Length: 310
Image (tube, rainbow, N blue to C red; front, top):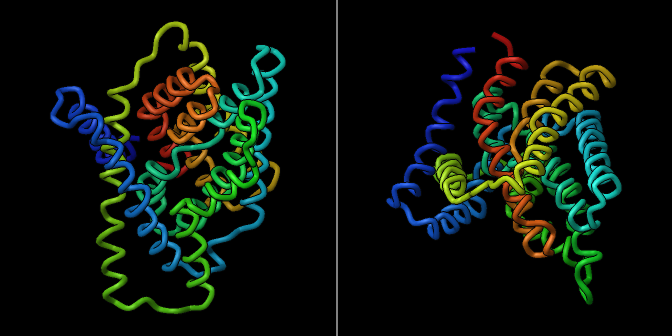
């Protein structure tokens, strides 16, 4: 266990540094948006593209893993939506926002850091499939629900399509898969550039996550909802993924273990942006993201230890 805590220390060290920098006002909170945009739009796509190109195409896509991981996310999305919509009597946009927060992980900022730390470059394929399952499918579903009843005159399908094709990470995954399929070798200078740019993805993203945490506040009125989102995201989701991949589909331990680790990551910050845009309980969604990120500082290393082994 100590080895996995030590392995996670640089990751959480960068988060803590970002938090402290904003707290003591060394880094203005307004600068975090630019830092996060650089990581998400430039550094992370370079990292993902290079990782995918470096793996054989057969190792990048496992249809059983993809189907099982997506089925787990869809099941939790439906259950969270149902509980919020009919038991708690929330509107469809609010229920959709909570379901999205409970099932879409912070794969862009935290995914590469933990996956590469625990599984190495072999984790590029599962991470790419998880991004497609959660961002392309589950987040699109959540966006459709939030937008469908809260706005008028909006072409929801066009909105979702534009958001997908304009997502740099999705573009990098598609480009990487094409290059890997053709077997084209990148020029050494271009490979070096991608390596240099991609190396900045993790520290800048983690620093921005920490700074965002410093700006978040959770009060009593939002605490219960935040706790529910955190419980589903950090406990029930990984457990569901393990039951589906390891018990139902009986996949190789590598696939089930990495699926559990990816599912255990905290909620994606982009869900808050969507909830704010469509007036779908943005304050409570923000609190859920902040709480899940804070709790994951303890749970993710523990799950890493559980799935990878001593």
